[in-house]
Length: 173
Image 1 (cartoon, rainbow, N blue to C red):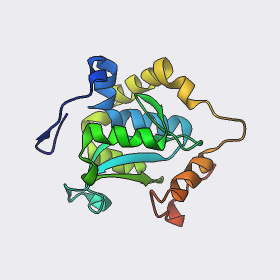
Image 2 (image 1 turned 135 degrees about the horizontal axis):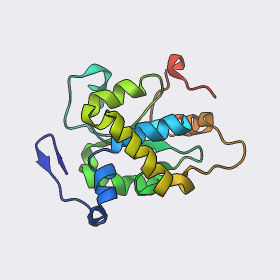
Image 3 (image 1 turned 135 degrees about the vertical axis):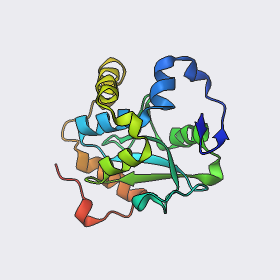
């Protein structure tokens, strides 16, 4: 992966062009498509060693990867559904452990967040392609138990301390 002057070796599963594109290039478009479809919170992986001077992200560092939080608390990206332990392995694909930081973003600022990460990812064609990938690969990950809501996902994020929730940004069902 190339980013902010640092080159990292891609994981072996990137021999799959779908994983390479949506896990190491256009994850933000996929995240936005997942969020729009489900309303679930967006979770972003940051490199705390690299700061940026764009909007409110400065305190978190650069954004390297993103996905959504399922109402059961697992993280979803192109590789599927991941528990918290697997999230640490995912982080290692992108940045050294001592520099990684997961942060959750509540709406309505998630669109601003994604737009300031990779504007090229947000063209209509990328969102359309992301919707097709969700249909083809990720639908089983989006299944929930009866009664599970976006608010359940938000509570899990809050309970894990991934974000100090601003009441003005709280998601509603």
